[in-house]
Image 1 (cartoon, rainbow, N blue to C red):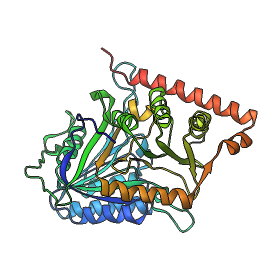
Image 2 (cartoon, one colour):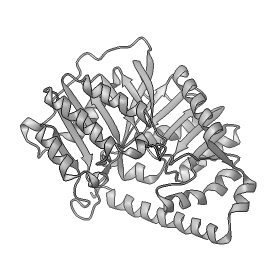
Image 3 (cartoon, rainbow, N blue to C red):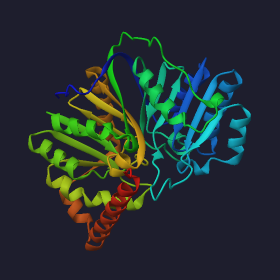
Image 4 (tube, one colour):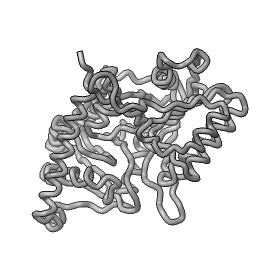
Length: 388
């Protein structure tokens, strides 16, 4: 895979892979408990359940030690964050705010949603991924956790993560004492020397870096590509790039959820199965639980992990963060894990099976769902576009 020069990867990182369940939440709790100076935590959902309270209790312990804690929660996704939890975190001295509580801003213009899931501790540890804070991402005795991934990042790009999080937190209206002024003067360099670039999507700031990165990966893939996608509805340009990659011999595997928490979106994705299969791209459906992952690997060299879904909602309606990792060792291990999940926990959707299971009614339902989602996406694009 050839990497375009405009992708400014930084050297000197240590990167660890985290998976939904205890792996992820234990790593977050450990990082919080070891914090000495400050914590930035920004996410889409925190549920009032055992997992949500475990996470909030860790933040409260940090605040009790004198650590500055900045907690930004999306107002729409965090609608279930209870008054009791709000009272607890505020009484502990945590600086807590809802992101964009009004759906409509100046004129008739929708606000972006805060969809990224990022924990930053002392400017030297960043955990970036796709998991919200809720039991369904941890798992229960009766329910397997939703499948998702994150990375634990140490190194120079943590300074860039701090810059992004501070820009979102430091709104003009907040008081002087609430503002985040932390900086990273001398970032640590690690012998692992992994190359990393943290990317963001923020339409209001004309940033669609993650979309461009995916397009570049599809354009330059030479041998193989694996995509795990929770809400998969690529645009026309992305479908063209996937088709072209397949035609030049790239083995493409796309893993989707067999069952989804968004049935209409699932049916819209099913409408694209015909296109995908006709272009010799393999489809797999994840069976044990809901697939919430948004990750990809290319040619055993490049990986991306984060909150970005391959659809226009992530492109134009949400603030997203992904980490791109350019490292053969990491990509190789990650690819092996994804292939193991495909082999053990997925079923392949063949052309024959697709034809057999699709009735006229289901095809019509898929088509209708696809058209409805497209109209909603176009409307959302119009309403989130900056008015001159």
